[in-house]
Length: 277
Image (cartoon, rainbow, N blue to C red; front, side, top):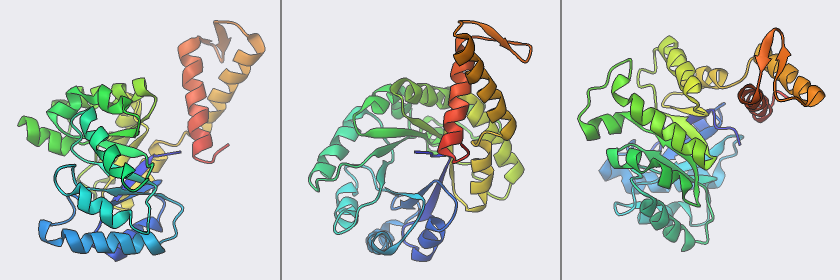
């Protein structure tokens, strides 16, 4: 599935959850964790369960639960009783043990759901490969804001303080053959800055980016959707590869070898996932 944009909606606000599910985000996350105050958790569980049972959406619906050992058990009891989301997001994933613990809880409800693991701590970054390799993990998400707080870093617009971690997460996801989703862009009114940050994430190898406001979705989707020019280039590469059956060949004056063929194939795959081919 395509996961260019991953939009969060607060779990204690049914109207915003329905609005998000009616939009253009590839994934909509009903959030029971950071977006909900501790005193409102129970009401949020009821709201999420209600919306899950009645909403109709073209988006993939995910629920971000609270960490295992906090209130994940209560969250799952609410959302897996008479309803089922398309996936579950686990925040604060610090090791493969966290994924295993969640798998055991899901088994109690016979719920075989993909897990989107949010890596947002020093331990999570160091253990990103084992988290990504866990059976249920279907995507790694990089959370720069919580990571910066965990390691005592000061967030900057350039993001140099989290670049190593950002790269480590995308490499771990790629090695496991799963999606990598980049961190949020907190200034939701700065769409130009969001565009630049998303373009950079795509250059790093990320497959999508988290969003905290509906207006961010179009910018993110566009950045992770191949242009007509990119698709035409990729089609010429793949066609020439099939025709020549040679290790190295020339297209448009450019020498093409295996890495560029793989890049072209990835462009076409992304185009297919976005419904362009």
